[in-house]
Image 1 (cartoon, rainbow, N blue to C red):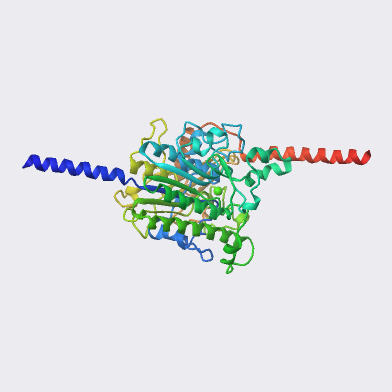
Image 2 (image 1 turned 30 degrees about the vertical axis):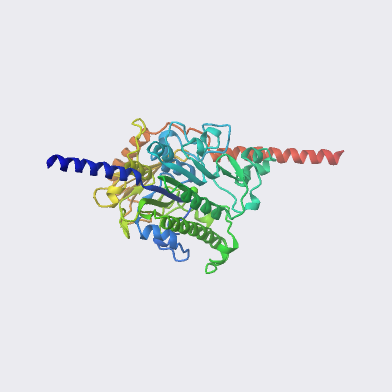
Length: 484
Ligand code: CA
């Protein structure tokens, strides 16, 4: 009798483990670009309507203290995709676009989500903005992504008629005055092939996302839907502008219209999951890659101080939510600090994907925290560094510290009482500050001594010089001609 029982139990165990293997969850990360903290309905936006993005928060868990690991695009994405502070491998700047420079982008020894999930049977796609390097060895298909539909640079033109170059090199060989913005005008890539497009860019990306899910729904998949909206240039189609007539004409209306396009895309992705019966087996994250650059794209970080590029909350504290019906509690607001670094760790935790010992993750699996199984904080402390500006920041509990090394300016805020960082407590809570400064210094010691590559800003300066030289020569030639 006992033997039969044992056999039955073993049989059941085998069956359930097989079922589990067949039901590896799907993962979707929907990332927006330069979207302000207050510019989603779930964070209280009054003028920008995001009913579909809000579904992720309302049918899942909304993070009140969700952070990214850097205040601008490239390094923030490098942290998200590796689950590690990107300063550990010198990704401290936006990489410049140079297909001949293998250093300018994600180092080959670092493993991105796509590379971590491949050995456990996942098919991965990145749709949209890459920004992790333009050298042929650094492109998505070489980094674990089975499918790529998008562009390599840090931004893009939105209308199909403006996408005219066949590659970055063609843009670069144009006269220097056009070179700088030419990357934004390349035709989209599907894997390594240039394709002709017909739709407004955000719609194009959403369509590709829906097609990918439909194509791959029988196998576990990871979809990184990396919208460049609402990053500049501010461009929206009439359809989306017309749906935002309640906002006065101008930058804010265009910005809102760009978010409406994203929101429609999110709606299409969620509807596809529902249609295919994948809802209960798909974990979706939504977040922005950094805070809104308010003066540039008319975004709104609400009560947060500062904007994109800053280490005040406005640069790094972003709209952030996760949804997994039946697994992640619905309608919950989670208050402890979480980070974009946690996304990879969550996926690895759910799939038992191996993580190399020599490259330990800084993120943690969020599942036990959001379900309440673990009631402690996911992170005792979170850190940030901007190497070029000499800024280092940290948050431990409610204490946020920022050190501006160049002028030795010290800041300490109590974020529970003062989320807007208006009252600097550094003179009254000296001990708290100095302890945390020590922790910041110890963490910095773990990072690469200097950035691994020249940044976009430096390349831009070089370009300005080249452009000035080009204009001078042009003028001289004109003068010579008129002298003749
Ligand atoms: Ca960004």
